[in-house]
Image (cartoon, rainbow, N blue to C red; front, side):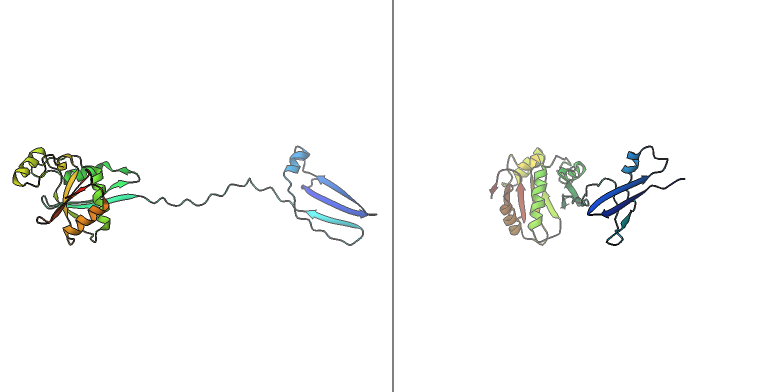
Length: 227
């Protein structure tokens, strides 16, 4: 006769002595008693009966649960850290607004686009712009009360252009940082040059020059100084 695996536990109370009897009948398909016992889990025991006689209980099969998997909190989406800048060059009519820095690195294509926008429009030559200068503009824009782009009066200057401008104005330095892509002259629609100057000086990120007659502010990544 074929029996399904069932575990019966009989508990007998006789003369104050408790004895336990376990009878196990397993299917012939199980290769050994040990394998069968591994598949039987401790069940719930319902004790029925009176104060005397045989008390019987049935253990229901409860199969072992899989090994517990450590709980992992849900992954939060990583917040991207980026820097965006908007510039307008009235000398060429070109404008550019783009992210130039994201997740710890400068974006090469964006830097090249700013190099072109800030080129020497007199000779149509470009030069790498110092990324620290873009950062300076980015930080300055965050403290100014305007969402409009900076207007670029002068960005990169070739040595020839700088020499020409020097002959036209005493305010042009012989070894101007404009020739290294480390200086820029700006104004911002709706914001006075005086306010831009004060905000730039407070940032202490480099040189700040104030030209109220021409209505622009000079910024560079050289030593901290004001004129």
